[in-house]
Length: 327
Ligand SMILES: [Zn+2]
Image (cartoon, rainbow, N blue to C red):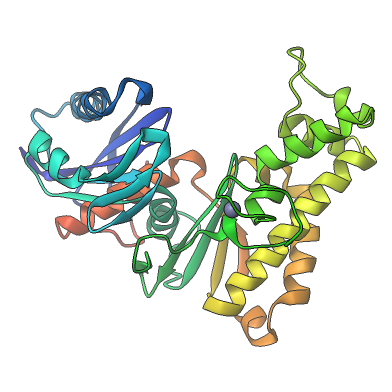
């Protein structure tokens, strides 16, 4: 075992991102592997193990790391994964199985919470001990850093910003609710609204920006909006307004110093940000508004794996502070 090396794993429904780092938080190697979630837990764990072995050998290190941090797409409490539908897990003792597989300390957390930790330790959140992270992509996820630690809540579901109700009469959400932020502002929701327009014989401007495969995506809506298509802009402005309302609720409750906003949908920042910010400012308590800054996330798709590294570094008492940006 390499006691001076830790591994961070971002275990997603389709891919596994794994990084190894030294105790100073310097990233030595990163690898990406398919999860093959449909093949079941045994194969998922084999692939996790393989990703760690590959990262170690890529870093020219023998053996296994001294500690592992891992993020999973689901609610986690004390090492138990309550529910991770993308991996087919329910009340699964991941910590136990990984402990046997690797023979080292294992720390498990929710993936969005770890992305928040990643931005806090290595990205846009450095130095902000009370920050909120939100990612707007296929879904809308989030994480809260309170006094330098992940605030997970009593059953591991804190930071589910995507399921704040924005419109009680709004569209159905994956969670079973109605009018959640995710059902209005996620990439999936943006594409759905464009498809609904097309089904009514409208949205010609959006359709002219669709790829050759004919699939209406959020990216196509973004391209149409950038070309000043009014229907595309309306969809994105609705998403942006919903984000502003949701973030105002978060700021009013938590009074953070920083809100870090990431995810693929924010590639349409120029259209989304001004509307989001105006809505946020209009709805946030003055005292909270004065204290908070809204910024872009810095780590992109690496936030989760770097957060997992930070979690592993905490296990071994390594440096998780703000002085060692990743390579
Ligand atoms: Zn929901």
